[in-house]
Image (cartoon, rainbow, N blue to C red; front, side, top):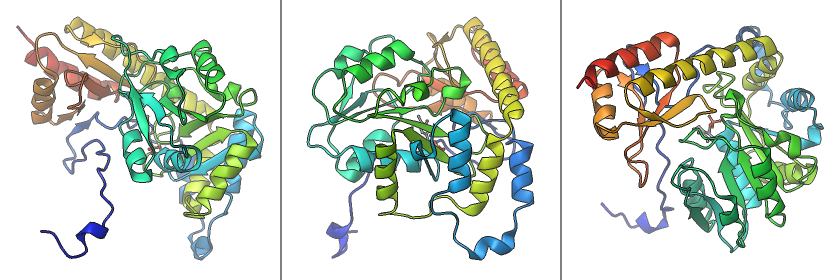
Length: 353
Ligand code: PMP
């Protein structure tokens, strides 16, 4: 019911994340979480954390993590920014870099949080259709715009573009900021990090939620030229000075120091992805090439919605987006081999002619 103050509330249409469930038996393949635990070193850092120090604010510059990331990626610490998950980092990027009356550009099929931030921050935007194979056409981004953002690999398609594509995009968009959201890049995609010294308008965003199994800790990062990072820090300090808590800082920093575990976990997820893709193809699914920790699929005989609901009945949670162009597609997160076998076993029975 309308209240006298109702018109004072900001109208918002929020982002809807993958469904959560309290049922311990569900196979949760709907939020692109990593099925493996975080690095033992990260868990040890939390176990050994001196809680008596929680009376103190964390480092205002998130110094230990910024320094560890700078060393890891061979950048200077002036080129690194961290935040409370990459959603926080991306929201701050939208606030910091998209400040033009000309619409920003991003694909029509993409991370569905982008239009949400645009409406929250009053940023005009235009969604550029992907081609019929769900690929981005770089020439579509040559028109005047207020900035560009794209995930690479794209979500929810999992399709990845390489260096030539990104250099082409950057070369044609030098007077605006170009953000590449690399949430899934560690699973075999091309990272634009190596282009940061060459293009001072490029921002690369990473997350600890996927490849580092730390979705619950909420840690993300941005990498860019020093002036862009200074701008991000100025906006962050106009909004929330301490986005990363001391425990998150300690654990995320420890995770960066465990390369062997990181590589081994990535390999397990990628091996399972390839095996699952083949098994799904054998069941008649069209499976898009994926460089991420999920598969984007469609089936010729059953609608995506039917498959989604049938899976849910069996406590198998996958992701279905009732959105134009992809309403007959499903996004399936790569879980453990056992989880994927449970899904495949059900699909084999369900799809029997
Ligand atoms: N970017 C993309 C493309 C994503 O799919 C996600 C996960 N929903 C994020 C960013 C945000 O991840 P997080 O906030 O957990 O770092």
